Length: 189
Image (cartoon, rainbow, N blue to C red; front, top):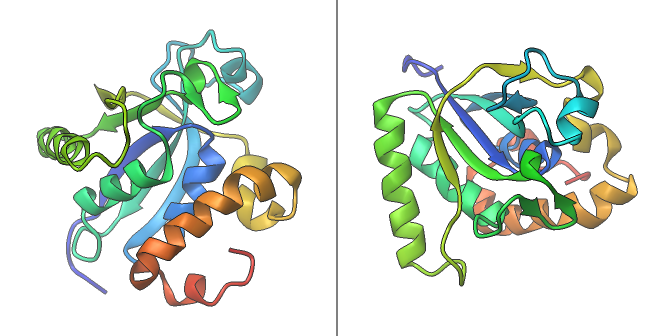
């Protein structure tokens, strides 16, 4: 086990199920929690957030070991697995609760986030400019239990097959060397 201090990253890029399905596979990621952040209603429910009036966004909170995977690497993956150029939308999911956002926990994360966005835009990974919101961390509320590890337990549901599976496949193609051993051999991904 690495002795480095654990860090937290909070990322929002559309449906939290998609992000969770990717990040839980990475070496160095110890925990991924789907939830809600960035809003003004305490302890919102999924139904409230889906209504688009709480200000919250569906997000994942990632606990990771920076000695194994860096915050910079997490962000580079983030910008490949979702479209950071569409305002309040990811594929069929629309509304402010699906916006692209990064909630920074430290000044170092703020600086790294700005640098990575500049680098990714310069590399022209996407044709349009990024609209990803960068904001200080706010209260994070874990989503209801049935949202946790959703793709892993519901991989054959239509949404998972049509929306999540292609994102996971794209991620795995480019980052196979970063996978946890058990994720690399899993058949449901």
